[in-house]
Image (cartoon, rainbow, N blue to C red; front, side, top):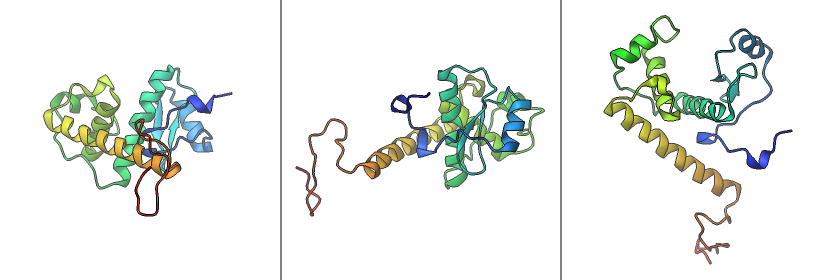
Length: 166
């Protein structure tokens, strides 16, 4: 059984759904090379038929969580895709969908997937924005789950009615 105390939350507060729907199960079984996806219900799902290490699975989850974030926010990439990146996606579902290709490049850069290449300056700026949004979301999630929790080692344990910590 998985130890939930050691399980890291995914970026942007996006949940992982372990119970696959029948169509998802069939798809993953037939496509073990697809490591995971941003599901239609805005959860990250990982392919149980994929032979990835825990480190690789975490990178895939981070990638897919960023895709959910881009899908649901107004923060979507508008950068140019390089010729090498475009060539990499030739023959895939992304070949004729520029927005999906940009989001895939951004998600792969964000998660450290080497298949995205080094990225251009504009791509790296966009991904830095993803990192900032993820960090802000993580802090907000901590505060919402326990507003009295110490943050970054602070010694404040209570807040009075005026918002003063003590």
